[in-house]
Image 1 (cartoon, rainbow, N blue to C red):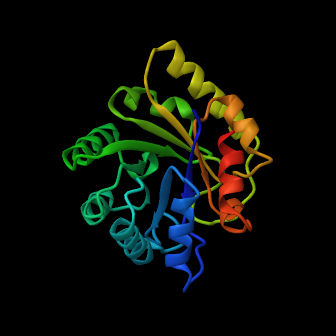
Image 2: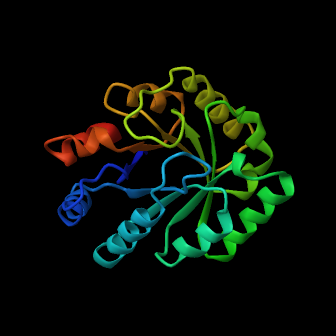
Length: 219
């Protein structure tokens, strides 16, 4: 079954409460928290996302899907563990070597949280294979991370397909999440390739009726 994780990156200031309540009522499966530090990516959303995540946790039991686009992963894990996320995803590219990746996986696990690893568009998907038995989700970025509203990179479809085949061939139980340029036009392509969690932000938040879009993305 396909699930939808709604990115709150482009929520309008002053409309946070109304938007979060409407998204929960529309049955989004997750709130997607895009955490950027201004170093790993250009944009800095760190404090805003911490505030939004804390607010959502006070008003909702919906799972939080925290995507760390940061250099200092441990500090971010410490900060965001306070909002009891369902899953924390970090970037493979933020780690210097294999040891650091494994240490980060263990560190997140100690915080009673599911673990995801994300890869940028230019990172070969094969680089994540060795870590798949230890994590719950692989997030394939289908745009360059750091900005909202970008167009889906069509060459990422083959990357999703390759990962799905590897997971099936090796009898692994792991979610494939895709993030970037996901809308009603691109969703069928990524679902067919094997993705089962779709991150969408502007496609949902710019809609008149969130539930209509969320239901169509899931369908």
